[in-house]
Amino acid sequence: MRNYMIRRVSHSVFIILGLMALLFFAINVLGDPVELLLDEEASQEVIEAMRKKYGLDRPIYVRFGDFYKNMLTGNFGKSIRHKIGAGGLVLDRLPNTAALAVVAWTLGSIGIPLGMLAARRPRGIVDRLVNLLSFAIISVPEFWLALMIILVVSVQWGLLPTSGFDGLGPGGWKFIILPALSLCPRVMGRNAQITRATMIEEMGKQYVATARAKGLTENAVLYIHVLKNAAISIVTMMGDELAGFMNGATVAEVIFGWPGLGKLVIDSINARDLPVVTAAVFVIALMVMVINLTVDLIYTWLDPRISYK
Image 1 (tube, one colour):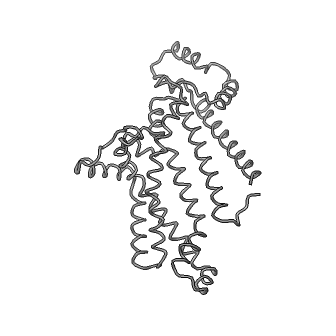
Image 2 (image 1 turned 90 degrees about the horizontal axis):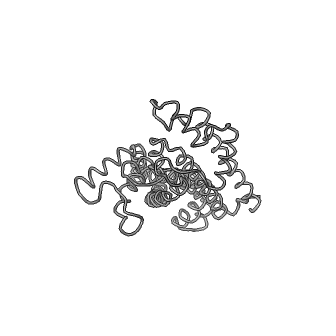
Image 3 (image 1 turned 180 degrees about the vertical axis):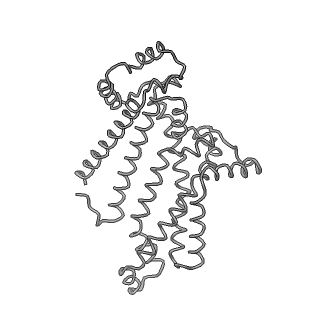
């Protein structure tokens, strides 16, 4: 296990370093950073002063080395827009995205028991209903659903604020409900579908017939044996969904004014704040790596036959 984790972490680190290299060359080779920072009407003197200010007048290989050196020390430079450290700004927004992701992810987990109910009697009424609803909610665009939730819950019913943020304490719960509700249906539908499909597949295997022949109840067969063997696919899906939220639930954060990573990245791109964009990409990639490693560890707990050597 230890050797596997060392290799896995090493591979993930190389992937992150490669991703950051692609980002560096996309900014510095495919385009001119100064042109992104200044207006088209800027004079040549202003352009040269900007190049010197941000060290863009140095050879690209020198900047590339400094880029990695600063990245490994957590120094991404100062935000052009906010005039503070870009790394600190991203880390300040990370808990907001994490809180929204956990709430939406938890609500989306309701799809697992729905999928279990559907798999209990394939092609039955419950199965057809769960299939219909899961496909329907997956097909709904998140931005449209978010706007409809605001229109109904906030504007017509006046139950919750349309947008805003009041911290992650007890007073901020009313601001997180609507964005979480706009994000969870897709997760709920996908969890229901993968749970149903995996459990039905497992129910056709020989060990299920053997368990039933031994006199085990249907609940014991489904919820102990079948669910445990189907859990690998379910955990994989849930890990993928959580990693997707950590990428930044951009649409919901922008519509509801939730100050998370997704909104920060969009605002930074619009403001041409390259240090913040770089720091955000690095932190997001790191979080995705941690989630994937955690999923790998859960595999060994769910199925003792899985051994990383």
